[in-house]
Length: 470
Image 1: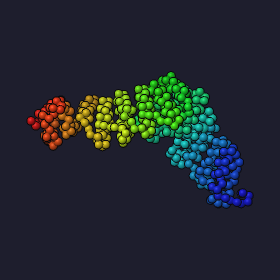
Image 2: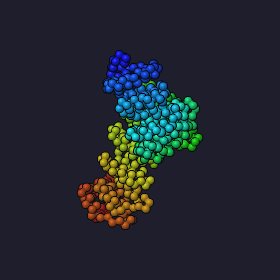
Image 3: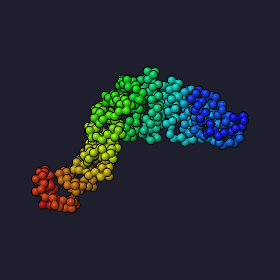
Image 4: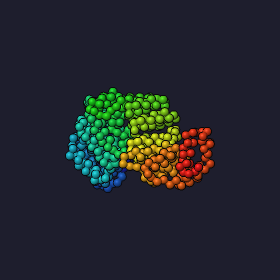
């Protein structure tokens, strides 16, 4: 074709021939044609003969994976530059694989400088290919080092989504390669070291399941290696890693969910409830939240039992930050019944551990979403301020709480605030709160309350006496 000066556009034949050559083990012969085509395209200045970025990348990948030739790969890179074909992350990913598989660490350092110079920010493809290259050469130590280094760099950039530096396929390759060589202890060590980084991440509580340990266990499930998953967890226990019974149960649960889904069947609400209860019992909160997410995506209508299981478990284990994130994730789901007492539980839990700013933030979020505060809401906030070390509520905050309680008709809590103000010698303007009562409860009568709730009647009488309304 070229000898007869028949210069057909590359897209008319090149991409089809490239795929056939790679499929049939004839890539070395295609490479000769490709290079000759590019030489003519540049010499004759025939734009239509120039391959695009996709074709160049696929040719480069053939050099890196099929041929494993550094010389051929770098020659293709030079051709791309000569034709003004701009390299991207896929280009550098192919080279990263090749250099890692050959153990050319100096070339990898040069490549990383080049990547930084061209401004490629998403390094997922680069890291994944480095990992695959090291696995190809059997260099497990370098594989672990690059994963941990990637985590550190990702943490420095945004503090979250750490496990996302590798794609799912890469985790499966890591697990498969390590397991085949019986290196379960190395996988356990990798998880333990990554946990140290993940625990210091500012958004670690928001990215459920986005951890190296979770991804490795999930890869075991996907590969049907559940017995190996248990071996890894046993190794973590032996090394002193934080693995509880819940993670074992969750691994079994994940296997069950995967097998049932793979068979085209669906778990019912009761099955999900049992799995989530097992995860929460073992304090494996991330897996419970992940299962609840699966439950929602399965379009099941009855979420109440599992919702209450998660909220109760997090409350008992004093994890209000997870409660707040969980509640925020389901607040728009009509299948989940959220009430004021759910918000109160979070506010109370934050106040109990002295995180008053988080409690106030939750309160503001509650108001924004139009949930009506109750007597307990204000009592938790007031008690939180009082019990905090070296801190007491000032006049404005306490007076504001009292005004809100009177306006809402929570007279029992209002009198507790009055007593608190008296103990702390904080002046309270009775006239302001008397006006609030007259504007909102002018028609409220003690005789009506006596028939319904004696305690509320007593609180109302006490407030009216204090405010001078009798």
